[in-house]
Amino acid sequence: ARILVLHGPNLNLLGSREPEVYGRATLAEIDGSLAERARQAGHALESFQSNAEDALIDRVQAAKTDGTSFIVINPAAFTHTSVALRDALAAVAIPFVEVHLSNPHAREPFRRQSYFSDMAVGVVAGFGADSYRYALDAAITRLK
Ligand code: DQA
Image (tube, rainbow, N blue to C red; front, side, top):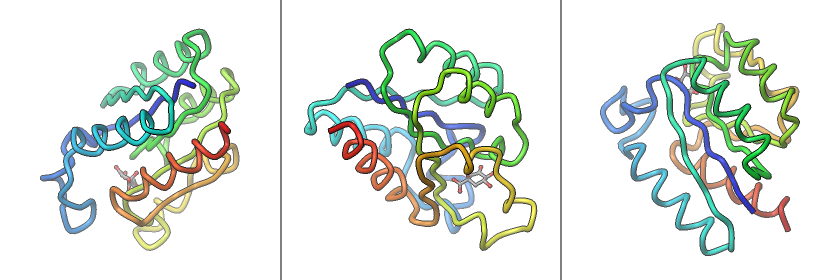
């Protein structure tokens, strides 16, 4: 099956961005190991990062017709702000897992609100880059 991994704003800076919060792995390293893990399980994985809400919405909309069966998404700061990105996921009705490197519940109060969690199959947060791996494993299990 086709799995789409979406990364929201500032995640292009992973590796150098607040490493004590987000870890030292770069986005390219994370995406590379996810693609390899998906391939070993017999799936095709594509990753897309944008700092722009409209680009992420357009990519979600495209997923409806490109054969995507499952989405793994770290909406980053849009987690707490974007009704529009939420609505895009509702519109395409593709199951998704919400991912965070940090544990938003252990941080500032404004990070406790997510526009995605109630629609997600599940949420993985707080395990650094491993959060993505656990989310992908959940996706692979659901696709069996
Ligand atoms: C994040 C948590 C968000 O609150 C924050 O805005 C991010 C990254 C995470 O992966 O821990 O940019 O989604």
